[in-house]
Length: 120
Image 1 (cartoon, rainbow, N blue to C red):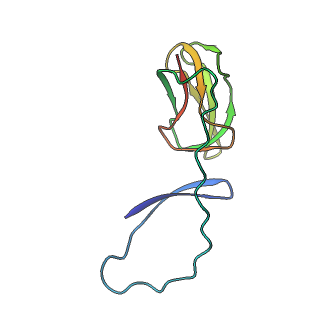
Image 2 (tube, rainbow, N blue to C red; image 1 turned 60 degrees about the horizontal axis):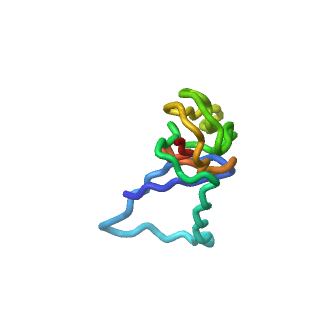
Image 3 (cartoon, rainbow, N blue to C red; image 1 turned 30 degrees about the vertical axis):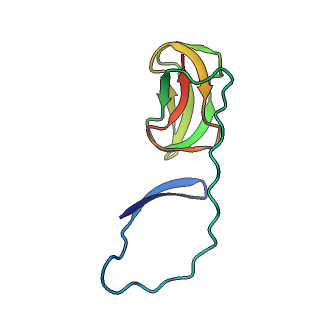
């Protein structure tokens, strides 16, 4: 089995596909042209990566970035807002610190556990 993340009209779906290992193969349908994968964007940081990671709690799309590089945050302050299943989910600072990097942009798709920002 292989797992894939597919985006259709801005909606992100996680799917698992079972490969036909033995027996007759299903008829092959014509496939659409495959686009080359996009290169990962460079981190949007001017201060360098910090030691405290701010990670997404759920897969979704970056809806809004609340903090800026160099901003001091208290524990629990919102850094990024992720939209998942039509809900806005705040991703907060796990502890007090200064924002060292913002590693995503508005509109980016993110997986659960993905590092969105770092703090010093």
